[in-house]
Length: 355
Image 1 (tube, rainbow, N blue to C red):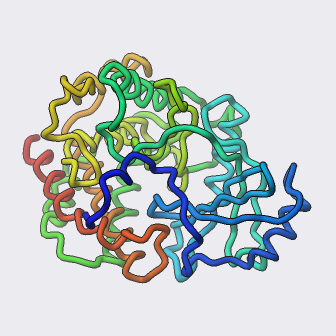
Image 2: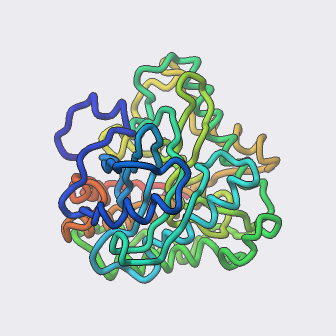
């Protein structure tokens, strides 16, 4: 990880001036939004969220009214990446079904406005934690926040995609192999560094792919840093970053979220090696059980699920590094964040060899 102020970890909602690489035609945008948004009157103020590795995300303010704009990054993109239209579609459907996501206001494919497709949604108020040890919280509160993390995911997986108009949001079944092929291909196309454990881990997964017997709405990037908690209560009020959501297997989401148990604080803010009991954080087994009870599942995560999740995460991280080196990542530390990919792949291989 890059050197940074530890206090920055307390506020993943921090904003900054718009970075040069993500500058917009603010006059054109303001003119467009005044005709589309409620309460968009007068001068527009634009700032950018400092946190996040994927699609550039901005705060658009008109007087007291504030909205969030999310767009594709500039530059050449992989064909299956940064599909902000899908983000908007799934959040709109879930919001209307009562799931905790931001209200969606509009989606536009008109590249003449900000240079890429984009959408605008409600600005939510609450707490977002990059650090999964939840600094500043009491032990009892941490336990309830982890419970909310597991139960909110189970609530997502309880939806029937067809009932939400999302039957065509992805292909049913075979999620693990499709994800494996997708991220293997992306890794091969954009690899930035030697990751010696990726090949043996891939070979193991080819022979030990998890069973795929269920199809639900899968967030794809469900983790502590992508949820917002109530300002003072230990419950989730919004789930963000739906860019790689699709129809998939629910345990794929759970395993990806549980990566924090197999990574250290220096490896994307994991909790491995910390005193979980003193912190009030449930163990891996307890977290798994909370989800299974809420989802009505008899069995949860096995080593094969975790090996798959770590392989996928290593490929995602190296892709983040590729965007950082190309200068079109959403955050300033993307190239450094991607440097942990070899350690993540090594941990995936350890899960594989543990059987």
